[in-house]
Length: 110
Image 1 (tube, one colour):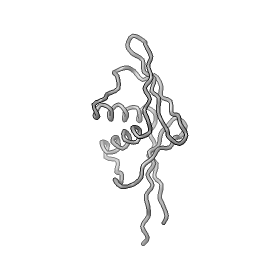
Image 2 (cartoon, one colour):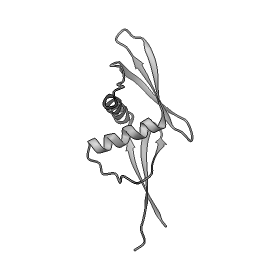
Image 3 (cartoon, rainbow, N blue to C red):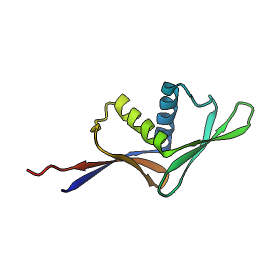
Image 4 (tube, rainbow, N blue to C red):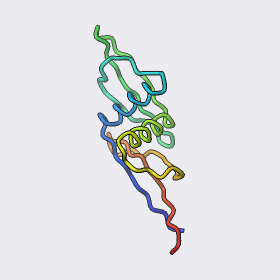
């Protein structure tokens, strides 16, 4: 059975906003610090490392695992009325500094 692969690509500022919104909604918000940079890492299991700066200038890092990234991007799509099939497997793919939510849709025979 053929599979259609759909990618929804998020630039760093977009996926950082998605992480902020998701964590706020889950009751574990990011600190109010400024995000200095975001780095994507991992091969099979992607993760993001956010480097934050406090008002006093102290830097800290927070690691965001793949399952939380996927949940944040799905939550973002729902909030912005981007249609997603609910029972479709979802994953992540890195495009340089951007992050793509991947959806594998099985195409039913006619």
